[in-house]
Length: 129
Image 1 (tube, rainbow, N blue to C red):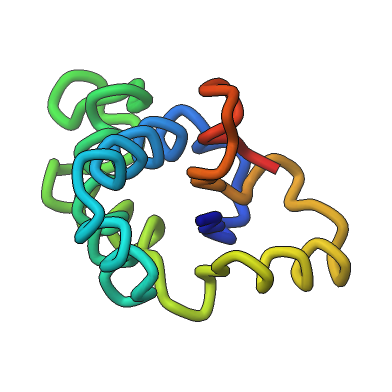
Image 2 (cartoon, rainbow, N blue to C red):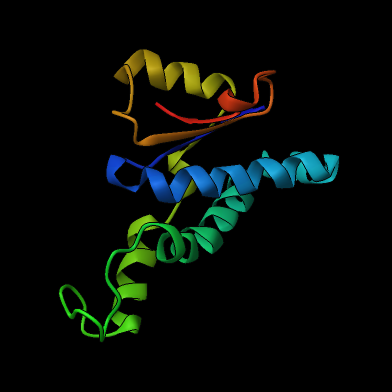
């Protein structure tokens, strides 16, 4: 199974690679989960649940109240990034759909994130193209 999220901003690789690594672990734990992940709505819900907390933990360089650079409050930051990271089914591609996307656009400038359970080499099971 290969699933691609067409995000579009390569500045957030440090957020989405860990998101996809967690989704890989989830798919490895259960064949039921692997089946459910083929449902684009379900896959989006998982991304949407994980993206903002992992951004805050792994990539965010400012915290409201400590430097005051971008957002006046944590709520303002959460609202902005939760919406910015939001995955929707029209930006999820599964298996052969990925080939069509690549044929049409080439690559995503490392802003398309892929979960590939068919890869034998673990370093290529989650990657960006």
